[in-house]
Length: 450
Image (cartoon, rainbow, N blue to C red; front, side, top):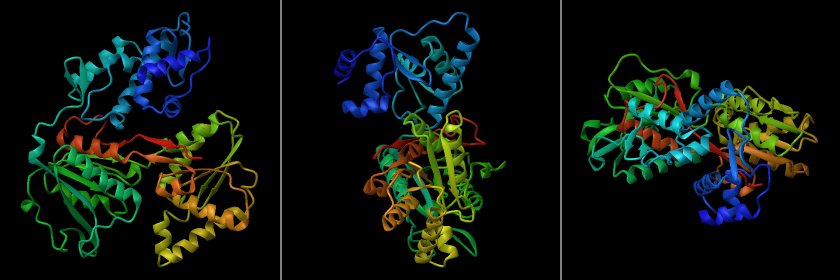
């Protein structure tokens, strides 16, 4: 397939100009992005194309600028920072070797020598291991079949695990799948927040006896999804003295590592931050939209404000006009349910807020609407149909089954990649890529369905 891609690209070659993006070519050729990347490496070696950092691949040889040493050095630093960021964000599988240095050189637009120096520095710091001519993240010291991992997720007072959203279900499926690949036992511990504080419960609703679990416990994976007091939960789990990997589903600025205790803690951010907004905004600019709208009935939450911040950043240097329709009284759909004393009341409140946006008339004539999540997007589409209004281009976040059913674009958060990084930290708690005081942001992607 790699040779076929090279041949097809050569058949369509031009004297100058950009090639499509790797993801677009992968979709066009029916191949994986990795196969397309290798084909581009071949074309670079043949002198047919060149790669410019952050701009993509272009036909012909790269023009050599005169006396641009400072810019070249800045470009190298930036490229190596991007490689380090990709290592932290789960772009590369922790159980497999990194791409060859030649491929990394092409992908990041720096010399083989610089890539080699950077990889060797990571080996010296203990963040990578060298195996012959390849590099990979450090292998676990414990034979995996001996180990077990504790997974702490919220439960009710009877010990029943609460999995009420697709993302929570995807998280648990990813944990089971990745643990099975490593031959690890999984023990799920329920975390209940009540008047007595945080309690760790077994399936019968009794206090969990961690010491009675089978296998050698290597660490704890904990979800803070809808946990009101995540710091109390972490304090309870740190008494176990095991490494902890946290799915931090709260504002990044709220995370803090306790100064005392034996448990090394690393936090991973799946959906907070500005990166998803930047990805969606960049797509809108690339498609040539002159105006877009941001719609959020949950703008009281940090993740909504962060996504809008990323969207603004992506369009800042373009002539794209942005219409903002937000309501900062509410944090989430669950917050609406609480205020309205039930799911039905929360649904009515959501419809009321979205209908208010439509009544204001600011959205009229705006061809593309970016909605804060799939749930709000589906409700908005229902209101448009009831009112007989034309459907605009819809882009959203979460990539749930709703975005597939209603066929609109949505940003997918890479749950499986996060779980891989979490497990890697449990095995190698001293080899964390990045500052332990910060939350590690995971990579995601925009799924195009429209």
